[in-house]
Length: 171
Picture 1 (tube, rainbow, N blue to C red):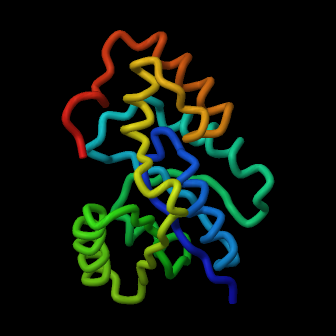
Picture 2: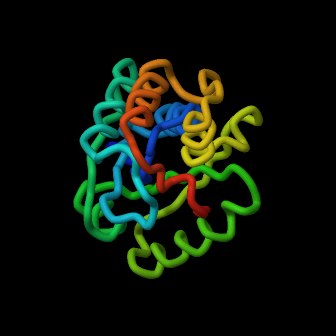
């Protein structure tokens, strides 16, 4: 029986830290589905379709990974995909508290679904999509944080965005 894992998130945009977690998960599970959440409290810069396409370019050489999106409870999506595992990345202690609460809530709603936490390489432990967008918006070099095609897409999107809501107070 194949073990399917779901790696949910907004991935706005996908960073090298996300890719590091993804590669670790792809080595552990038969199939990994990157699940883009429609309903998030974050102010997305890229549309779901744009994020999915950017991610597809990142994963083209990883045969057991695919991209999808969902607009339901995560546990309902996990069940619909016949998965049993949710993969989450932990960068720092500040991530742990929120992720721990979500994992316990998901376990309450769906006891058969396990959440596993993977830590990125040390060099990505501070990296987030929000910080990456902020650096790019202010003209900084983000080449070490995202793949080249995402850097290009981010610069193009920012050049055409009159207002950057992601620079406002967010966690």
